[in-house]
Image 1 (cartoon, one colour):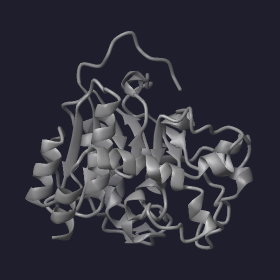
Image 2 (cartoon, rainbow, N blue to C red):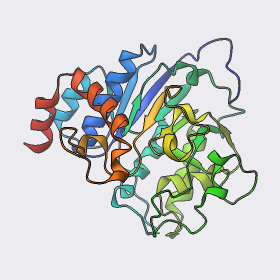
Image 3 (cartoon, rainbow, N blue to C red):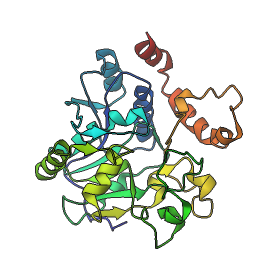
Image 4 (cartoon, rainbow, N blue to C red):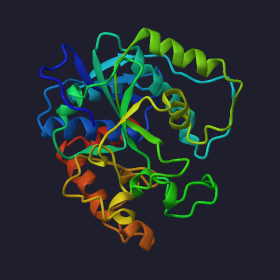
Length: 296
């Protein structure tokens, strides 16, 4: 992680992206609530498409978020996703078009900030063509057969290995970036000009790793602690140090009934992290309103 500057950017914001009125609204509300709880000095902006209902918009606005409508981004090229939700994640690229901000930190809605992270707004980037992010974990701990063959522990950036094709592969759930018209146009031009995106199994994440290549600064895992890290990288990941949990894969915490037994041992290990999310979600006191908006 590069060092901070001596002064804060003139305009900076946390940004989340929503493309429909589904359970991710719960996630966005919880992220906003958590950022407020840790006393961030920066605004929370939600970029949303027309598929997000007016009721959900009102709820987010009432929770202290700044709302801005954007158009969805969907590439015309051939695709082949590992999970269907990656169809919508391209719209995250719109964060580069938020030119009123000099610094943006993108957060996925399936995250939970635990500590103040305002220092990310001061991370020094060489120029607007660079980003800062955290390594993805490419260990494939659950042995998912559809994952790339080279997703093995020896190729994972969290193992500290200096070799392997995936060592410099970042997770796009949290990115520190400088909005720029030039950068945004380069990104979307490349995206819309790609006729074959079947190599982007993880959607925007694979694509952005191609776009930024070696132009990304490595942030400590604490800013994007994948829920699997404390269990498969216990030698380097300590949940007590974590500033932001990322609930990758399924199930998401909002889909886990904490009053019932875990379906299997694999999920049981994540329950302490799921409980942290539920504690924050329940503290907002909006459960009934959110459920009515999402489920009717």
